[in-house]
Amino acid sequence: MFSTKKLLSTAAIALLVGMGAFAVTATPASARVVCNSEGDCWHTDKSYRYGKDVKVENHPDSWYFHQDWTNQKDRRYHEHHDERGYYKGGLWIKL
Image (tube, rainbow, N blue to C red; front, side, top):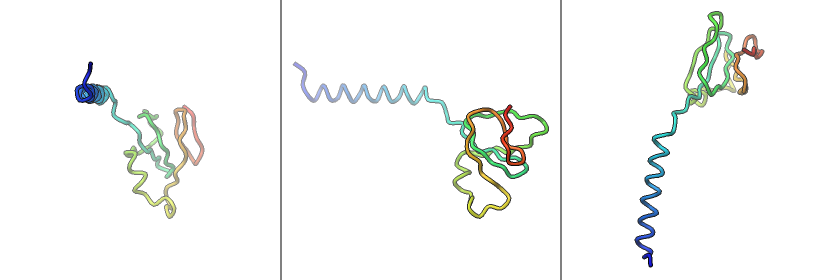
């Protein structure tokens, strides 16, 4: 028969090994906020290369939370788009 103590310690070791394997295989998040020169900002999950005529600034995802969007006059935050593209003049341009 198995003892409860031995069963719990085996389960704990298995859990630690599993968590370690997950930590090794996890990829770092690449979420970011992108703003163009016109003040349009949007969230993206991937890093894209835009054309030479599209001037953008990339910010870490946490940058969004440190902005006062309510009183912001020179920047506008737009919702996330699933497709690849960018904002120009407040309109989404699909690539």
